[in-house]
Length: 64
View 1: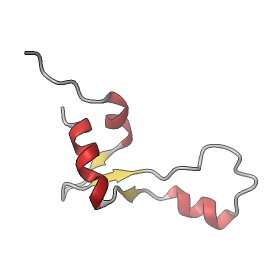
View 2 (view 1 turned 30 degrees about the horizontal axis):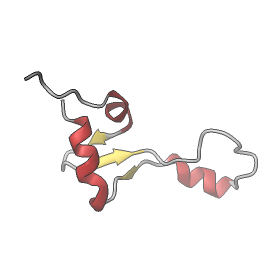
View 3 (view 1 turned 180 degrees about the horizontal axis):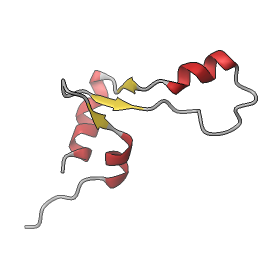
View 4 (view 1 turned 90 degrees about the vertical axis):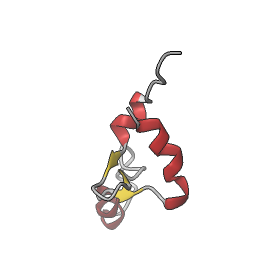
């Protein structure tokens, strides 16, 4: 039986930290930015971690 393929889209969007958690970028930062406040856009710039409850879903996708 052949190897399972990793999800290439997930590999590009999530990165593992040294402690094994998954890092991601926040959504709603790509277009229609004029209607969003500067504070909101500034906070969307920072990366964040995938929640504990969701981590197992994405961890399986990015294993290669």
